[in-house]
Image: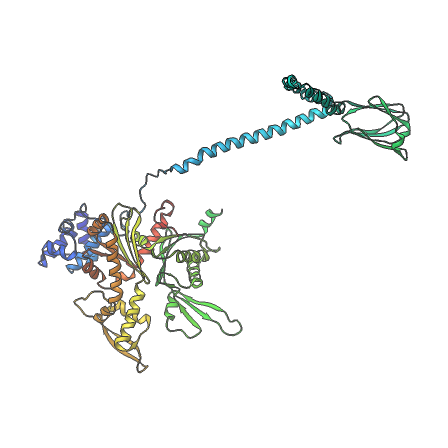
Length: 279
Length: 347
């Protein structure tokens, strides 16, 4: 209150007064106007006009409106509104401005629909990871298998092959009761189909070199088993998976045996170089 | 990606792109540009034969109605929206550069720009595009009643209804605001320009005289009023007599201007009344308690508040410094834009 008084006094144009409300009240009485008349002219309620004159902010709306009311009231009473408003707290630029952002608890609401896809997403992620893992494992296993196969072709392949025919008779035995011909046919077919596979792993080449010669042997997978020149009187033994493609430099001076059977190089020789493929 | 660099090189802006005036608020600095939305264009003859911008703003406004044939003074905004896209873009670019004068790099600020609440999607898009064309990095739109209410320091975020009437150059925007949003809004394409046009038409009809738009604006500012007051003001005006074709002086009174303005004023009163009709009763009670707030240049028309008081029976308050209310509101939103989501308009 005393602050207000000081401010009003310091503006010096207003006669000794107590407050903005008091100025308004005195001016209204001076003009011979009742509170009711003033309220009717300002389109305010009597309660609001009384509050304005009593400087009672609790009944009045926010300062921006009160300043407007004071200006309107001052205009009605032909007072200088600016002087009054300077004495009124909450002048624009003074005090804290009105909050313009809505206070919020900020809890997001998930609808039912939104949640539905979440388990699907999780499940598909799990499946995806599992699939990727499996593929990776398969790739890895394949690589190690191939490494093993190339390192020790004789041992791994027969076990793989041997594992295949074994379950077949077991499955077929119940059928043997009804049809005796079927297992016979199967057993007849089996050796035929499997036979090439058995020697495929255990083929053996023996090259007896009488005159120094250059020999190259490549197996089924294109892997070079032998590629060098041999001195006279040496012997090279090659084991691998047929078919072998063989190139023998000085073919006249080399004797070749395949699985302990001698192979005549003459039909394959051209300009003393033999090129042949052995199944 | 270089957003943080950009924010170092350019200031964020809030623009009140009005039909009559463009105001620019710079973050942390306040309103630093207030110019009429007028662009003067010169058609160069001869071998170059190109269009160049002669002047923008106050300089261009002085050329309105005084230019020779090869100079056009254009007001690119009409009824609160863009009427000439290219010119608006050039004008914005000019204003933005003017603010960033001393900078080495071309500015690309974030911009908050206000749009009339009644504008269509196409019109809003045009405003956004023109701001982007003028070099804005990001554009946020805010509806004018919201900006005006914030600028007038009204309690927009509170659970209480506030009625704001923003009478601009091209449009009158009436908005009922509560809880940080617009509950009801109405935009009427009536504003300062319509007042001027009404005065021109009245004088031609009753005096047989042709006056220019700047003269009409001057009459409106000096003796225009919205409600019959106790004192009658007079003003001497010069125009061209339509019958004789010669410049003649005559005197016009405020009562005649009041008569001339009846039609646009009725449109404004109608918009306010229809807003009150559409307002939910709970908010209506709040408004009856606090009254409505007038902002925009139109609020400066003498006794417009009296007219609305008599017509609606509610207290009417003219905001402090009504001309800059929208720009200040936009600026306030700019200062708090990073934590403010609800006051911005979608396209």
